Every structure is written in structure tokens, then in C-alpha cells.
Image 1 (cartoon, protein in one colour):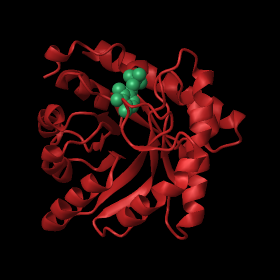
Image 2 (cartoon, helix red, strand yellow; image 1 turned 90 degrees about the vertical axis):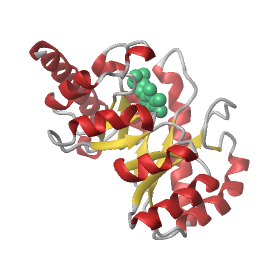
Image 3 (tube, rainbow, N blue to C red; image 1 turned 180 degrees about the horizontal axis):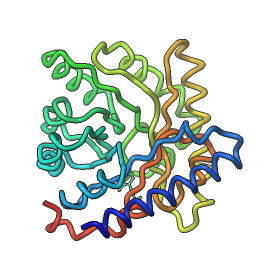
Length: 246
Ligand SMILES: *Cc1c(COP(=O)(O)O)cnc(C)c1O
């Protein structure tokens, strides 16, 4: 146990050092970058050790898999839980009740359903808009792989910005899986360019949060402007097989 906490702490320190170096290379303030440790498929004892090692923000993809972890740890730790996977409508209640941010808001229909549930609960949920920068059919989010498509996204964004119980904070993306980190760079620059495009169109809206970069390419994401990086394996090692996760 002790040893695992120590190992996770070392990994977190290594990631922080990499963030610092990358921020420095880009002339950025490293304090602008926060780590989301992705604990999907990890059993609760590993998640507890992650929190003991100092993690503050945890990312999960499946609300029903996360709920027992949230309930089991809520009396011991103040955790910021981020939903980072595609949210199915029927899982909305779990997210509304227990998560602090939805990074993966990927459509107007979902936004409207969330708004209704949040209004009923009297809650406001911080969200990021998920964009599909690679245009892959397998990925969620608005297709922004070509700049000609950007104008077409504006009505959806405008609609979501009118919903009083959703608080748009910025953008999120999961680019195509690449062999080398450097190959992710054009996708990261695309998301930042899109952010600037949206900020210009929607004056006064705060799009300052940019969630991009995973274990394999987060230093490049930080160089390009990420404020949240989502790292799992770089901190916790390989994920266990799914049937061991609960
Ligand atoms: C699993 C996952 C991550 C983390 O991936 P690692 O390779 O373990 O760092 C980040 N973002 C999303 C959306 C994920 O599903």
C-alpha cells in the first residue's frame, strides 16, 4: 500500500516536472496547467492511493462504474470528479448529483436534457464542449476537422450558452491516436485556434479551460496551450482488465 502511494507520488512529480519544462519552453506559466488523473477501470483501493499521493482532480468515463468510488471515498477526501467520456442520457442523474465537471458535452440534445435535470436539482454544472478535431467517426463531439465546418457549429454553441444551469468553461478534445507525440501537435493547435474563433464570436464568454493531452502527448499539449491534461497510465501504469475494475 505505502509503496504504491509512493510510486504514484513519484509519477505525479514526474508529470509535474514535464509540465513545468513544457510550459517553460512555450513561455507559459506552469500554474495554469492542472492534472486530471484518469482512474477509469481502476479499483477503489488504487483510487484511494492516488488521492493519498496528492491527486485532486480525477477523470472517469463511466458514471455507474464511478459511483461506488465516489461514495466510498467522499468522507475521506475532497475530490473534484470530472466526467470525460461520452455521457448517455440515462446516466445524467449520476453526473448531476456527483460530478463537479462534465468535460465531454458533445451535443445539444444532451445539453437540453442536462439543463432540465440541473434545473430540477437547483444546480449549475461546469462543462467543456467536446470537439472532434480529427473527424473520426468513432469519436464524440462536433466535427471541427476542417475550418469550413466551424461556422456550422456556432448555432449549437449559441444555444448551449443560453442554458442557465450549464456553465461553459472551455473546450476539450481527444485527437486520433498517434504513434509519436509530435503528431498530435496539429490537432492541439486546431483546438486552440477554434477556441480563439469562438471567443471572438461570443464576446464575454469565458473559454479559458482547454482540456487536451493524455499520457503519451501531454507535454506537446502543454506547449500548445492546454490548461487541463488527462493522464491515466503515466501515473497509474496500465489499466487492469475491465472485469476487475469494481
Ligand atoms: C482513458 C482516457 C484518457 C487517459 O488516457 P491515458 O493514455 O491513460 O493517459 C484521457 N482522456 C480520455 C477521454 C480517456 O478516455
